[in-house]
Length: 318
Image (tube, rainbow, N blue to C red; front, side, top):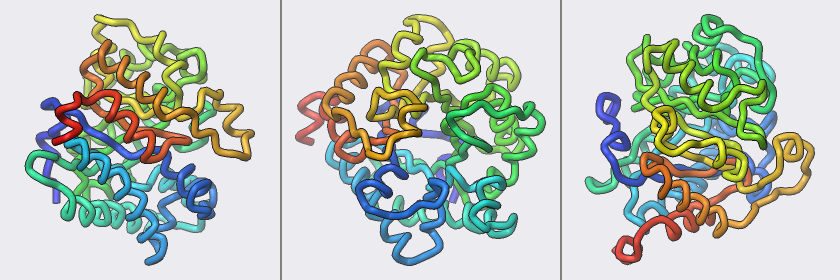
């Protein structure tokens, strides 16, 4: 059911919540083993689907309490050919699970959505390789590589797709082109290092402007994920056109670098209230940032703190 594919409600205004650090929550809070950090494997069992349902429902409850819209991102960050091969999923199995991931979210939307609180379904795309290390694909190769997963989301009825934790311009260009060719809106979400730059040294401005230039502005908007606000807040410049293309943030709970997080054996959940205040400051400086969620280390408590910091008191009691 392509309910919003041709009219994304988050483009019209209002605050939209998303989930947080799915994999870190399931591993560290729920004690679930996720091979190669892949949550999509849970879709293959009744118990796994129930765990995912409970995970999403915790965030949907926060959104209901605060009267926000919601973007449901599928648990398919690892469901691409390279990672699928490591997990024993061939081409047919990957297509099937990507299609089914959208049907799974559709059932959640059907029970939660209200006219005043739209719920958008997005197919989540992860990088071909490691989100913390630069890949070496050119744009054409990236377009061909990600086209199959995007096609599965189109077939499943997703409203949009989002490329998360991207650290190279070429991969972002490829995803945007593949989505455009298949007629589905795409969002590009970059990750940055502690200096606010992509892993190869490019600035956010350079990355966003390059993607827009090479795709004729194909992405619906851009986001930043898998980095703490202290890492990227200074890289944003008020009033500049490229910043206005950033409509969302899904930050890490921790201020640690990617390298430090990679080596960590314990979860760093940071300070939810502090994170909420930082989101509030970002919203005040950049009102276009209306898509808010979390990434590594965050859970529904961080979503609650973000809403409490940003929404006016009258909205909290509505």
